[in-house]
Length: 231
Image 1 (tube, helix red, strand yellow):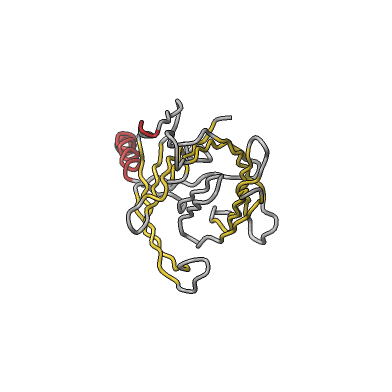
Image 2 (tube, rainbow, N blue to C red; image 1 turned 90 degrees about the vertical axis):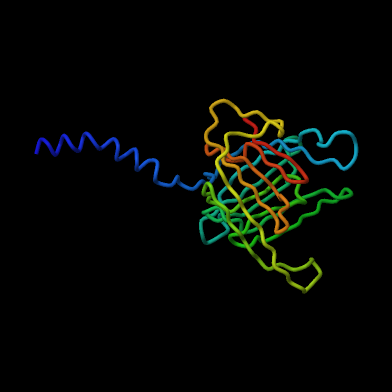
């Protein structure tokens, strides 16, 4: 009996060591809940002039409870920090599946709203919004590569439907590359880099998520770059 106990205590640490390093890490998903809020700094791509990016604009993102649906869900809103103008409203299921996305823009002095209903289980990329909402398919396993296919109309006025194929890649990163012009804050946790590419291998958006934060430390698409800002 004594030999058995001695054996257990001798090899138990080695057992847990092997278990820790062989079990896959839990997949990552943002922990959004009603009452959460954060600030996002956004710079927009410039078509003309010496500067590639505009001066930063700040949006306040807030999560509220969605009481309009039978199933549990939340609503994400983004409002301009200066004038409180609504830029984005997203309905999501309880497991963060986007159900409906509304974007708001002022065009020639008139407020315009555009609405889409994303395909379930498909990355969301909305290139015409002022408040960013690039949204990969969660949860994120790392490392992982996934291919997603949907059938969509060729245009808003066409009845012809064509396949669209996107690829999503995620991996653990040591940090944000220096070329992005952003320094990590001290104490940042493991960083997950996720990139969504078109069928032609064009990068639609890339993001760097800290597991402890509700929004990417940094994200970029061809129209804007954005980052989480500590309040």
